[in-house]
Image (cartoon, rainbow, N blue to C red):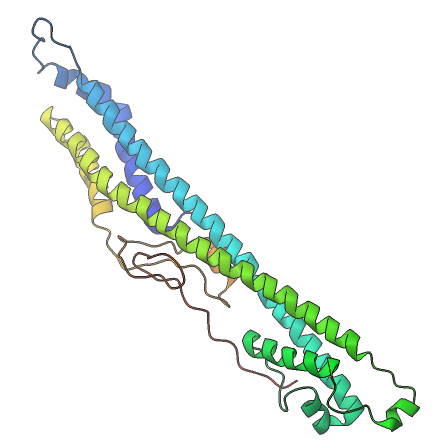
Length: 297
């Protein structure tokens, strides 16, 4: 599904191209009647050359915008997938951490077990705070501050502290890798957004000029209705200057936002800086979203 801003532009270009392709030959014939025969040694020419040149210009900006938006939509979908992967791995690491802390609680008692497991209180669900607690827990597992009570040992309870540490570290490493991939994809998405907006600016520059020439030529030979259609198409593009923006989805945003690709930006770009990327027009890539509140282990 194309964004509204892009669809309006492409539809307008297609309408003008259709008028040229359908009625161009008739208008050219009428225009050519006004051309005097070339002087001796001169070069004969036809308005058809003008029509062909303008049609090629319109085709070029149309394809440029289609290509740029398609690439941006692909990047949005990639960001969405990586965001889901990061959320899933965060949830899995949370489950591992809770399980380790419950193991400590079983060995040392609920209150003391929490302290031994790194931090008293709840296991955080937010990625950043969770990773910090996991780091501390891994250190404690590898160098326990308190020995396992003798009673537990006599009862045959054996806890593989090293194995628990390795499991947590593996989960944290996988999450870190997914997180790095997400950040790279978001930066790439900021660049495809810049490319798309540049293509929109180029179409907004070329289309009114080329279509305006065609409108004038149609009026010159009395094709007022056809000229009015072209003018309507021009106004549809030049009159759109809304503040709608599309974004690279922030962490935690709904994945359907990217996959639907239905919120692609409207309006011309500006020169506002883009966080953690190149200068970005009109909108800025949203910063990392606020982490969710902690919940009890």
